[in-house]
Length: 253
Image (tube, rainbow, N blue to C red; front, side, top):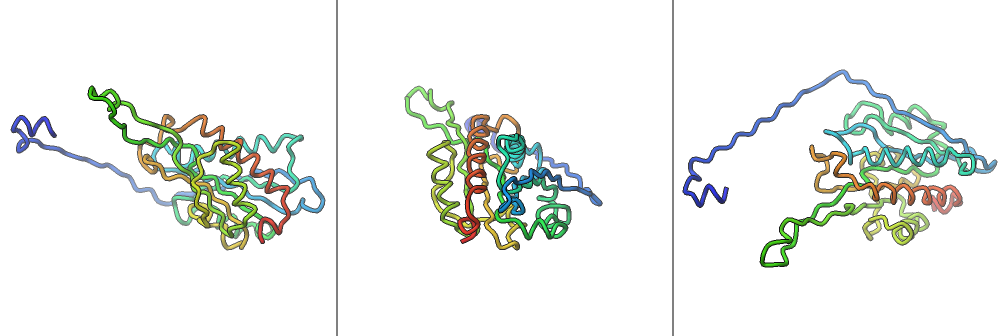
């Protein structure tokens, strides 16, 4: 645009934008469930739900490929005999996040009343390792820094629907222990998939980013931070273990 203006040709500059879209109806979807039984007699019937949605816009690497990858890693970790939890873990790959009427947390709760009645906390893993792109800062006359952009994981909101002090404190510890990029403000946010579990009246824990490429065609593998995935997986393995070992009163005061 600047070159065209300088050349005096701005009045002849033309641009055309085309968008093609398709609408599909009559779709079906199913939630995927994996259950790791708890081993402690007094806690074995109690359930911790670990949810990540599997549907997406565009390539969906960040929403929610990264969250699903972390969820699968956690399922493999806790499936090892030496890591068996005290409480039962129910891993939910929910299918209908972006399409009302398809399966998702609300349908899971409706179809599994016994599971819902025994759930003491629900964890929603959503958008957790996308990179954050910030404009380059020019520091030198030759413009060297003009072509250098800073990138790291985008900030992550940690929402605890019932504001349980014990759970909120775990996020503070997680920043120090694992370097995960949680923002500092305490939040009761339970948006996204978390909203489907709020009718249970329990602690609903949500981890969620909204980085620059969120919900765009730029959500490709290159936008995901591999170190960020590892940090989040390590943190959540520790986080879930602490939830598993806590008294019910600490989770839902």
